[in-house]
Image (cartoon, rainbow, N blue to C red; front, side):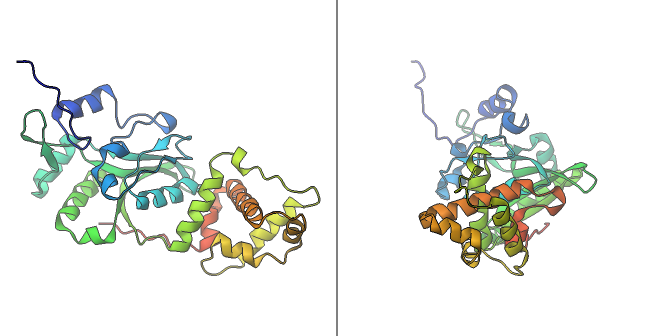
Length: 299
């Protein structure tokens, strides 16, 4: 009798499937818009557990939909996407299985595996790193940072730490710094700012602000910058807008009887537009707005 076609779960794996992904689909190759991630969101079981279903367009990915597994990954993506010294972000980057197998053997750690749905036998799957980020140093030279995103609660799990150790050794052998960023690495105010600016930043068209002719946009932008630099602690964009309500440019907007939401949106877009104009050495507007404490821990 002919074999029945069995529909497998998107989280199931087989050796034939992985060979097809790597050799035919060329996963893990390409750059920018042409980059092909090692895994897609609908293939990542933790994305389902985290109830993550959002379509996220990446600035540094030239508008390509980024394949993420959690809301924390999304927040961290915004930070790298807005950072001026970041050239490229490649998510779910596949690691060479022969290398990770060798590392696991030397460390006496069990390599990640699953049951092959064809043979019903366990086999080693390929591992992925959440983000492989290309940055520029002060001399304008490119360098890589491999980023693992983990909730703090998971870092108490021995098995999670074992897999992190394999990743750490893998990248260390390649001279690449490996860092772990957690869900506690960004304050809520920082996350709010990242989200608002990222929404307005993606395309120049979105950042075009139509204001009444009697409003001096340059003066408003100068005041925004002054207000940002006068802040010594974290502040949200909402709070920043409240602090500059007495400014003449803002009053002119109000005199035009614009809805408050529209005024707020205009200021948000101006912030994003200014962020695009920042010189590289100033890094990101996020630093100025939030006095961001970017916590990194190397394991």
